[in-house]
Figure 1 (cartoon, rainbow, N blue to C red):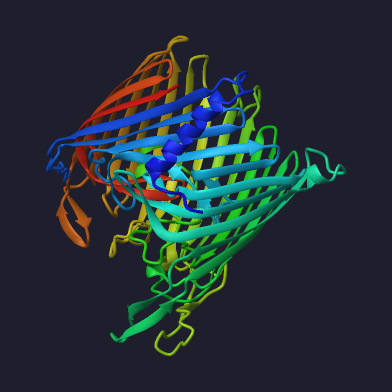
Figure 2 (tube, rainbow, N blue to C red; figure 1 turned 90 degrees about the vertical axis):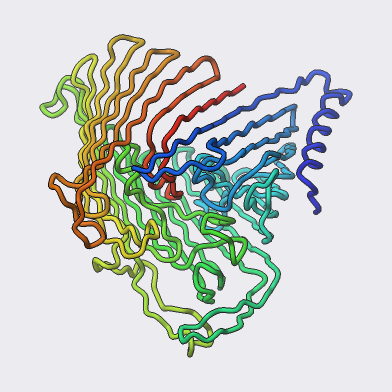
Length: 580
């Protein structure tokens, strides 16, 4: 099916909407129009002390607006985007520039059939073989452009089919990748099919198959001995997955296994080894108690719709969820967040939450909450295969959950405990301790950097002066002898409901208490650097305005195990969001 130029399809969508409005017999149905708008502009100053270099334009500007019109069974929408130029470090992958249409679609549903033509996001299971999604503040957007059909032939059975090409970049409009992605998914909900199961107990079974097509081609590859080999790349690469999900009032157990047929690509050095992955999660909850455990193993599971995709962030067909806590406090969230290693990882996580009841010795007058969390990720224990003698070019041998648990195989460890308690009618406090082990070489791609061992303590407080005014604050400290050394952070946010808020933050990197610091194996004078920033915001109706001024340190910004580099910056930031 030929989809056509973005502007042409947008015109078709709006024309169809206009026709629907004017269709005889639909006079009783009035169209509904809603949408949203978001813009972030930043003025950059030169700040050599933190390595901040302004772009030639001195301003960066990202903006987008969505408009969705719904009428009966019909829906049409489009998103206009502008990057004039894009903010520094944005997006995560191939650059965005210019202004134009970034997303448009028409959708129609009747009875149990749902059809979308144009752009769409979709996911099969946990996404191990297919997930099309966006995380706009990371600059991750692999929207499909094609056709999606969803159908429910009988109660409890859900079918999906997708076909299209994925968004790669933006240049006065969406730029699509070369590869064609096709997939199908079936899911069976037993409780809807069999009345013997109650609605509180259910077993969901699912299966998916996805294939990418890219024109077959020869690929020149440098061998370990320096010679050059010519390899034939497969045109079609398939992947399949099976899953089950059991739920009851207290239990939720989920397991999914995925297998990818040989997929030689730039990221795996063009080996023909199949990929596979297995994840298992189980949670138990009752009043005042929650327990969850999880484990997964991924082996050669990076799956992109182009074998030579420009970056690991582009054209990803699947999504491999991380098994680590997503911290919100500034230091653990921005200094050492974890990013999933799709081509080889074994990970485990456990978490316990308990609330001591009111009136007990540990619960006191208002009760006390405690949460323990631990996770770790290591590389796979692999045995290399000589590419010069291996005719199958598999690269290495490995097994799922056979990890390299030596210190040189460790990627990440996070152990943390949080104690949260309301101490009076107007005060609530939370105290958190965290211990990190973090391989910067693997996770951030900085070769030669040592494994980081870090301890952190965070004190958070909330004081309600009255029903309209409250103060929230954080005091954080991080100790480490590696990487950038010690950090301290203070945050204060004063809210005047329902319209105003002001905030101030300072990150202080003082490396060590002494006068010298060991950096990259050399003893150098210790540096002391402040990163202050202030904010003021105003909220009214569906509109939100915020102005920030200050320093932003270089680092990484992560959401859900996907991260991008953020450069050092100094300047003024203005943000506007609006919904209607």
